[in-house]
Image (cartoon, rainbow, N blue to C red; front, side, top):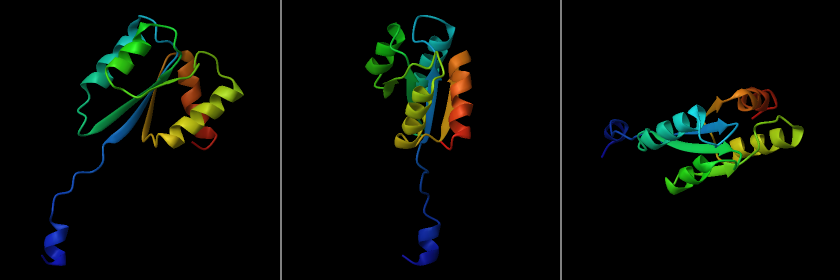
Length: 116
């Protein structure tokens, strides 16, 4: 195979790692939306990740669906929570952060400002 032939080989890009931030995992619209989205994204193109408090039944549903889920209290923005979120974004190599709810909606942009 020549170098030119090698360039023409179709190589699929790695899946986009999407971190979904939730202020609650209790039954409601936000957690249901994230669950539906995370379980229906084509895994060949996306790797869903979830972070939120363990305050409802959706937390365990994410785990049962084999979606990497991290307990993180995003319902209140505190310096320690922000530090944990930045570390999570970096260790999980999230390409995209999608936030849901007032606390998570503030945490995502704040983590970006802090260099995540």
